[in-house]
Length: 234
Image 1 (cartoon, rainbow, N blue to C red):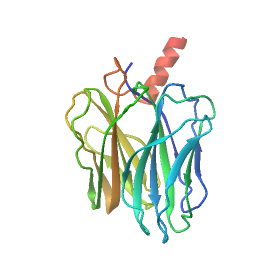
Image 2 (image 1 turned 180 degrees about the vertical axis):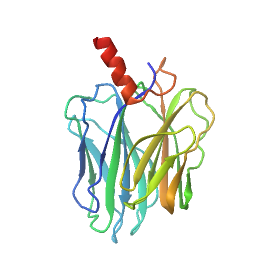
Image 3 (image 1 turned 90 degrees about the vertical axis):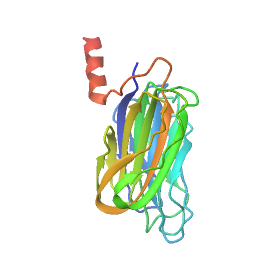
Image 4 (image 1 turned 30 degrees about the vertical axis):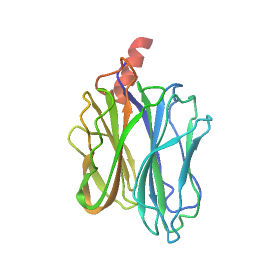
């Protein structure tokens, strides 16, 4: 089956020392991959880290971090969990290690089917600048011909509009955070790009994930997947 974006959910509690929490609208499916893209702006103390957990007992590993952890610095961090335990009322929690009273915190969580159940993370890239043109560095050559590429962009809670790059599709966005994806069919190195309006300081984090054997092809949007389920049920 082709890789499919099943559903997305966002959370943005803003500047806080309490966790950011969101529950997927639909039940998640056991065996799928969940990626959580986090936007973090440090307060004056700096040094705050985040951890991702859920109420299904899954373990989330860091994939890539863009930006530093100094005072008032900005970060975009990606976490993932492959071959997840799923079910109804699946709640994602992002917990800061300290106060973000003068900072900010938010996340986008995406559920994907069709990805490798073991060792899916392949390559990463990052970028940071102050501009309207968002871009990451280039990854190395991909390990296989069929991979999902995701690129998150964080701007520390500032109101900004993003336009996906050519060939990219948005998964979801919340205040100061945007995530996009595409599926590639070759092994050539990849990089992320998008447009921000207005010009702003941004951090971009890109990760590629291996598609499961026999699962190549373009990504299927959630509405198409839902229509297919309805046809089968009928």
